[in-house]
Image 1 (cartoon, rainbow, N blue to C red):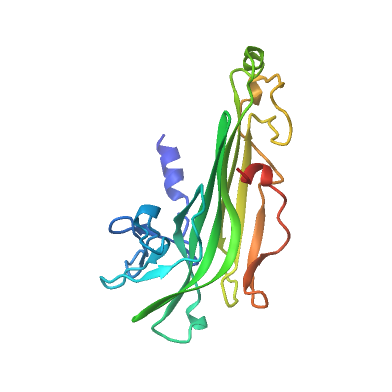
Image 2 (tube, rainbow, N blue to C red):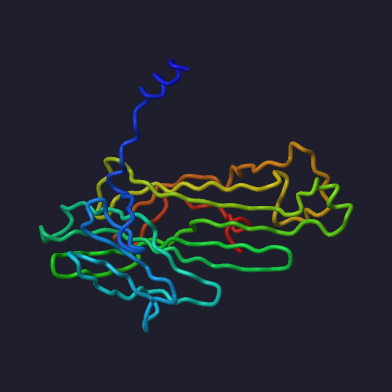
Length: 257
């Protein structure tokens, strides 16, 4: 026991990502930089005011309301991605200004007989701050972010038995962003990683799974090797967008509610 503790204690602690900065809880529902120099909030629909969509960025006790370039359609919701991406300071002309990329997660929910699901996309937008002004700029990235789908698969007592009472197929997709060390450009390079899983492991959304006879070993969440992938994102000044180093596979079976 002591040896295991000493080995664990000797393991290096992962350093914070200098590019993708995790925000911390602030006053109310605000999410803040660790030094509390900037706090963000995407209010819920009931608190969004007449414009419906606002970004609150409190600075030195004051708040600026900035319109977001999204609309809430039926079944959609907005939330703040609890991170900021730091843009290298040498790309900013004013020494007192700071530029970040902030994220808004747009989520869609769908309900259907015996199941339902939700899926979301992450949108990154430029955010410029100075001691006297905060400005929200253009969108530079739009990627699939996460999803959770549940599809009914039992339609008779026999199918309940055949499927060992696992009467729903579950499909999940999650993604993360991290910085690429040492990469230099107008905007920092990023690594996009996704993990997709299906339960039971034999489930395929594009097929009829109701007649499957499952084994105990099938009742696990199995990772899909095609839709669990990694890509490098680099900013292209010609398109003013981030682009993947190679195309992403079609994972709509996991990501479309």
